[in-house]
Image (cartoon, rainbow, N blue to C red):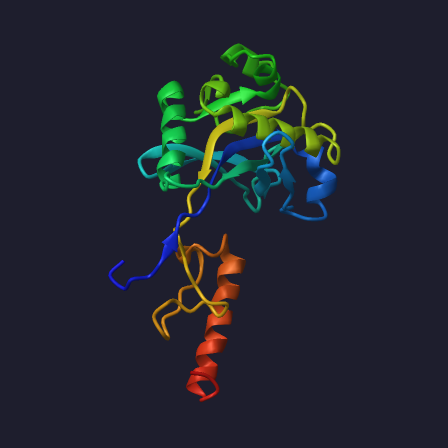
Length: 248
């Protein structure tokens, strides 16, 4: 702000961590360890994507900005019987609302309020309009890897448009990986990804201040290590050209 740089709010990604038997996605994960699948919901035309797929991995707790959310990882040697991945719904807001991070935190806090931490629900229970109980989770064919999660009802947490988009995504994934949309699939909530405000930049990633460049996730222009690294290379090439007298 002190430099007078213009920014705009980035979208916030809100969704669930999906857990199911590794055999369901084996044909995909054996070829592509972490596939990136994108779907646009029919009801709301919102972008829905998979994120951070972990074959033979575990669902874990993540603490973000004083709220407890979920994430996932895999170990090199220690393997579970499950695969987990996130389904995230991207929400971009228009005027007058300009606090997408606050919105994401509100959803996460609501889940913490209802479940005293993360909530887990069988997909079959969600579609049947009932909460999952410890007894129903114990009968589930997918054995949860996050025992700290409280069996509950995610329909009390998510707005309708998010829940509908997640359900549509699961149905779409069923077409390429039968078994994803099973009633025994587990959904953990919530998973939230926050992004920095996007700085207005030139195609070379230069700010409104001459010779000041902004790169990576912190500038709100990338999502992850590879993209952030590529943005650094792009800016470095421009800087090198100018130092060599080929630019401004």
